[in-house]
Length: 114
Image 1 (cartoon, rainbow, N blue to C red):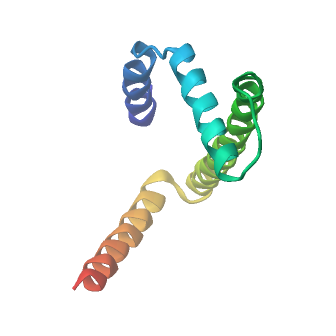
Image 2 (cartoon, rainbow, N blue to C red; image 1 turned 135 degrees about the vertical axis):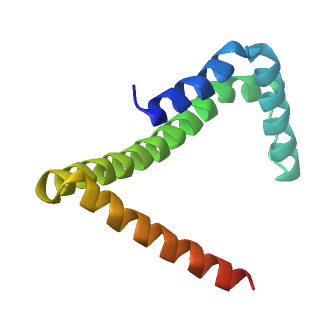
């Protein structure tokens, strides 16, 4: 198991151990919807607000899924680019160039901070 996979496993263990009370979240979202509707002068009953919660949750979930999918596609693209370069030029050469680029970026960041 790679170091990154181990770090990800450690991070997700802590998140999996936490439980979420969905009834509290649902009530809070219904209240939020009611508050927004009242500010917009839209008559909205508590029942209608509660019925909107699953739709809003689905939309929020879909948005997060799209963001994560894009992120992991970029990560996979970078990973397989590095693998291809390692196969073509050798692991040590790629690592040496990567370290040079990283040092140049760190130096540029430290200059920008000053």
